[in-house]
Length: 331
Image 1 (cartoon, helix red, strand yellow):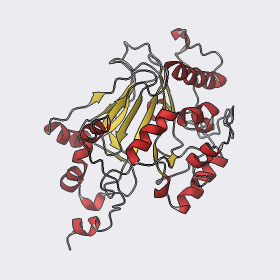
Image 2 (tube, one colour):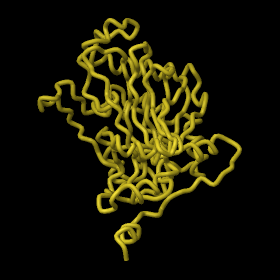
Image 3 (cartoon, one colour):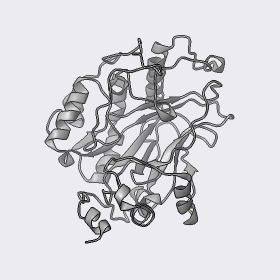
């Protein structure tokens, strides 16, 4: 047996396949590896969630005025990850985050993909990107996928609940259309199988990106409006794109992914329940790869952030729907 055959024999084949044509947006998700579904949340609700997100950030920075761009620079913002993703301070379990996750048409979209309403949701990030912050250098592109090459087929569909205008100059998701369809070929022909990792995350080098470019595949910025839902296959190469110097729009989005509860193991459900009870973030994945993020936030110098929070500013109402989506109660 060859090395590749040996590795392939251990691949997790518990995957799903889109088998269109469907005559709806699923055809675009299947062919392009992503889709923007328009007006999933009413504009007024999108504005409500955005204002709640702004209020959350202002709790840490009372001098921040979202209507006055002169106050955006040199802000001592809470600790965040790449592309301004906030996962600490219990933010992922704020009431408004859960309200957005339980929006009916968001749930309907994922139920349509997976063919079931019995879904789990990820405990994923809030993104607030202030443009033109002089002291903050722009994040360089960091193309990646959120699925291991050991997994073949569709295992995870990621989502962005979009709460702000995302035009050509603004911060938004950047991705390589149709790259999901080339995932197996890329890893089988361009990467030494002995270097494959089971971790559901992998960066792509500039040289590797040239392979996609040679296939005529180039990055695009996803354009969207408040209330739109952006979906993409986790095998699609993507990254969080920074706003240009021409942008005056504050990118505001909630990351939320859903998948069938039936795919989760008992161990995964235990971890999700612990994450809910301790108000911790996990990963983009709802049913697997559920890694609990550190609930104690440290500053760059290694000390604990005095602003660290062990619970949300406003806890959600623990309805049966929330508990089932969280994996803490059976369907």
